[in-house]
Length: 290
Image (cartoon, rainbow, N blue to C red):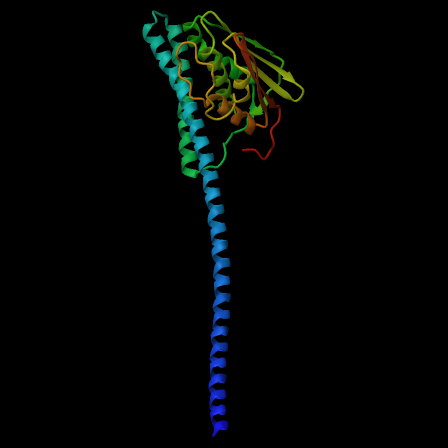
């Protein structure tokens, strides 16, 4: 009788052990599933994190492009305003009117092209600054920019002159973009120079580069300002001498445009005595650049 009880208890114990083994096997299987799901979740989180970084990078690139185009449109729009004012107040001859109208037409074409470029960038969600490279004369760009800024200089009794090396060769660059570079540097020189000062724009060749310098007798920069002169949105201690507006984007845009041309931009300045901003452009660009 006792043996029967033992057999019965043994059978029950075996059944419990078997059930326990089944539960353990089930737990092992679920653990494996959890590990697999955990790996999948980790991969998804990593992917989402990478996508977020990619989206943030793309957004920053788009912001830079939009800031560039908006800033570029602002300068020629101001020039048109000044030329129209001059045309209205001028007691001039027909030949003078034709010259002013020609400048208005050229500047209007710049605004139209910039607006079209802005629309194209928005439509394509471009992730870099597009440039259209062609062989062009740097001196011609400088002459046009100086002429269009002559009125602003005269209003502040600032003398603006050129010192152009007529022997420098044509170089490969985007004329529209380099015109914006020279425009930014010249307009800045006028902004930060007091009445009666001087702004000089010079060009020359150096090795396999063409070079441009904009030299002023303005208020100059501190050592700290020089370090952050080309940083996006940097607020410099120097202020325009006649209350002109300054966004902090101009010099940053200059550097971006020169960088995309594989050139170099630089500044030298002495506080209270003036500044020299310059850039180098290679004579030849890569054939893959567009």
